[in-house]
Image (cartoon, rainbow, N blue to C red):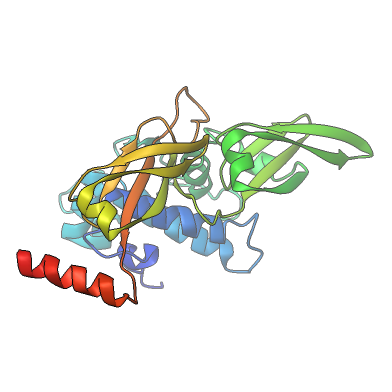
Length: 287
């Protein structure tokens, strides 16, 4: 039997990784190796492996047990104490799972862990979607722009000679799946040059000048809804993160929106005129 890889190694994170870092690593790998998107012969096994690792590490109690006892804590022979069941709980982090200890669904043995396809569906907002049945149904892939995903849009596809208008809801993300009559549409969202998305939150880097950082200023910053005036406090340090509440991505399965975070980056000029250099030297001598 092949030796299991360390769960942290599987997700490509270190042992001090935060919950957000684990989530981000799983999101990236799950999309990369999902069998519907990756046709490599080993994609399904890798998908199972990363889902198994995330299922344990995303749950604080299971993670603590894994850090202490390793894979042996989750073996079929039991954990560190006789009769101990590491999967007695039916909730792992923000997701609810159904654990199985036998059977061979879809040709895969999940080794006592919950079905990795269910983890993926729950993680990306699909709920208890019948994944395997869905694989029998025609599936279409649609690639849309970042702003189209954030605000919602409408696309037209042809299925069995008929034209259908597909309404993509605001807040759609990579992997969002829409059931439409007798087929599914899977969404792929293009990366944006300015906005970076993490769940329902968005992040941007906003450059400011050294005088603006020292003296304070009001600077225009882009948001999903247009430009906004942002007040920079005097003495702002480079890397300061400012939260704009409710300016993020709409939540698919509930009301409200995420937040936007603006990271202020002080722009240091690589070249200075003689006068500017003189002024900076005077400033330095004054302190």
